[in-house]
Length: 289
Image 1 (cartoon, rainbow, N blue to C red):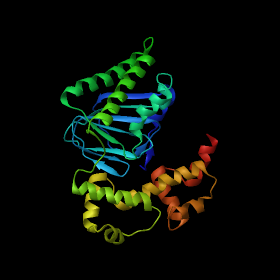
Image 2 (cartoon, rainbow, N blue to C red):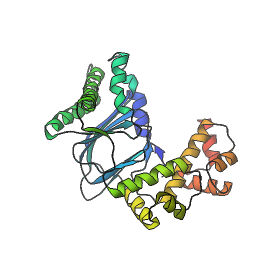
Image 3 (cartoon, rainbow, N blue to C red):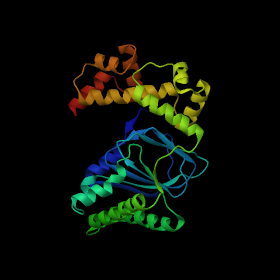
Image 4 (cartoon, rainbow, N blue to C red):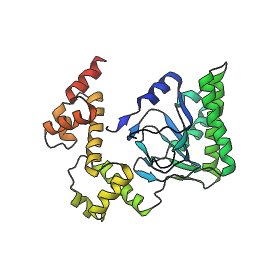
């Protein structure tokens, strides 16, 4: 899997402008780095996991809520040892246009401006209210009784307002921090790779530039993100190649060179490995569809 677009979320948003789960506890064999349309509010209930959002890493605790734009690459990496339980809602800004004035909507949506998201921590007393909001949205979306869309909009507006109040009044909303030295180090590596993924930088060079032991980089990066450094770079390049193939008429050879692949053959082989089709076929199928 490469950095992927989460299709179920996008399909749901296109159809309903909302995608919600309440106290979900299903486990997947793989949790890929992905993006999607709209905005996400992800509420962590229980488990043992690390959460990658952009180039920041966090180890969530029960009651933590993550608020971010769906376009920011993100990935949860939960352990199987403890049941991973969460609630989340994805939505589009269009959903609330008829509920709020332009200025009101701009104020509420300001919570999503931070490039690596925000962290909100809810107290034990507040968690019952948060639980009730997610449950209410899910039940309305499933039952679809008369006026359900208005009920969903009201509940979502209430949730956004609660987050906005915390951001303005309390100090419990923060740009997502890295809470340990290892997470801080991995965040530095991620930040560098995200900015320089087209360059062929060796592990030795990365070690010197970041003043980190290369063996420490390898171990901590793999343990935290689930990927090796080289694998992450290739996935990042392929993800960018997909965007260029779909959004431009740039020749495939040029795309290969721009993204730092040593040869067109290597680019084609890597692309097919992660996408399941050659760059030529990928672009052709998109045009046909």
